[in-house]
Amino acid sequence: MGFHDLVRTEQSLLARCGTAYFTERLGALTDAELGEPTLLQGWTRRHLVAHVSYNAVALGNLLDWAATGNETPMYTSPEQRGRDIEEGATMSPAALRNLFDHTVARLDEKWRNLPDAAWDAKVFTVHGRSVPAVETLWMRSREVWIHTVDLANGGRFDVFPDVIAQSLLDDVVGIWRKRDVGTGLAFRIDDRPPVAVQPESPTGTTITGSLAAVTRWATGRGAIGITTTGPAVAVPSWL
Ligand code: ZN
Image (cartoon, rainbow, N blue to C red; front, side, top):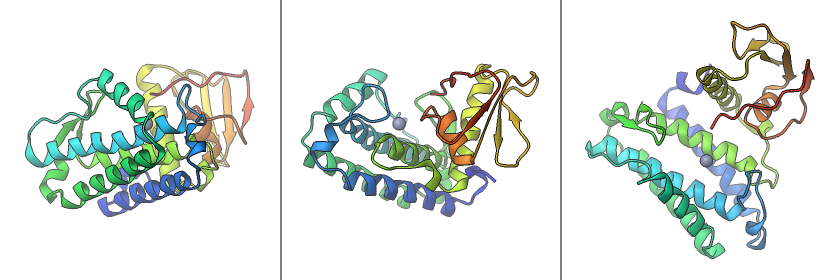
């Protein structure tokens, strides 16, 4: 069972729970701690909070697009997206926290007010993928759950609902398959049969662990609680 098999109300609940998790971890940080590094190379917590805020705006743009039919992309350009994050990171802690609360509330409002028919309307993601508007619930869930861990103040994969962890892992493996990377790599979660990233190729390395540990490894957030059988491999990138 993956995120996409759930009904919209359940998907929506998971997106909100993830936001609540991020909000809770953000609330536990002092203003000074916002300047410290995250798990993401080159980004402080300020950058990350700005990014998660502007991601809410970007997804809100897709909901406007779905509701009105007027093309409003997530970001004007990759440069603009980068500049907004850099500028956001220079805001005062109070302004940054405000930006986060405000953008989260706005996105929530747009989801609540989206007419039933518009949920199936096709919009384009920043990667040029055509998706129905309902996909914004997964896009946001993915962001808020993983980035809570990236805040690096106690966010953990093992508190993720199983359906979130499993769907993240499925996303990553799907992207690797499409890019033809991860050949020879397989995952074994608990006592389940191993799953090869490229099923046509023989397995060289198996990564074994809990769903949380394997998902953490596959998303490039560290090797904790996993065992590697076979030659060590670098985690292929998925973003
Ligand atoms: Zn992100």
